[in-house]
Length: 413
Image (cartoon, rainbow, N blue to C red; front, side):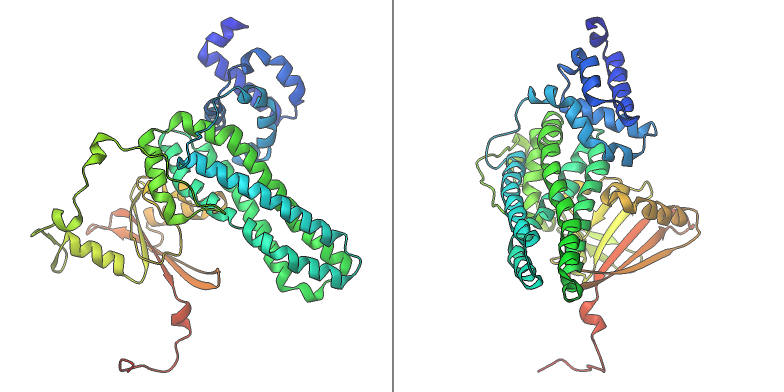
């Protein structure tokens, strides 16, 4: 068997065949026994590479997602021997791990509070238990910040190293957790219409899967995602993730700041836009602006804009004070499809294809989120010859605008 293990390509094909067998219903325990020699030194990044290659070869991402737990179970003995993630407080992996520890504690608190609800003997007692459950649920919902930092910081850097699997598989799992929270929110809004049995069943159907998925994701991150990321990302990339993390925020904790990495190039402060653009004007279709003034204008616009080039890569986004959607510097150069949840990619591709083929120039949506009304528009960018040059996304919080009535012709006193 060793001669095959030493052949890296053959070894990879054997491991991929093992994953295919899992997806065809093979017994994990039997596979572990059959492939035990190969599995002795399997690394987390190798599992990620294999899954990415299988996706590229046509294995549906939903299948990878569905059997992710089985993959972990088969490879777990080998993964136990892998180096532990960073232990220095302040390193992004340490921060993710500290959040997971805190989330695991809160998940147990939620589970215990839910148990009291399930044991309630009357509808009134159940409603009181549900109210008592709410504070812990609000804490658990902070997992959103944890997921957002992975989706908009960690995943983009992994993609630059050729690892697309996490951003498709794990993002979809994040969205399943979000769907559970939406069901819980809807449950609270219709509470008055439930009898005791219906209330218990409705809570269990939304809450139990959420807890199971959150705890399961903690295991997947610890066993595969973080070790794989530590193998692939450079110290400079971890530093960039750390510096941008504060824009999104943290779940349940505030990270320490003992870890830092500064290269020699970073020792000198970068010149600001005013210094770069001193005296220089950029000619536009009408008029001209300095680079500094142009940047200030884009930051001050009461809308969020994102520019995608003709190759579907993010080229720019405005940095207004109150963004509706998360944007980080890590997404510059990222395929725009990877900036959206997996369930939305088909719609994104359809919009871009219609723009490129000239079938449309505008796509418009409006949604309600977090109590705000968001108006989202996409515009095709075309040059003087009508050739497609890219796409402009414009997002605006129109909650207050929709409430305007009558006229206001003068400034208020």
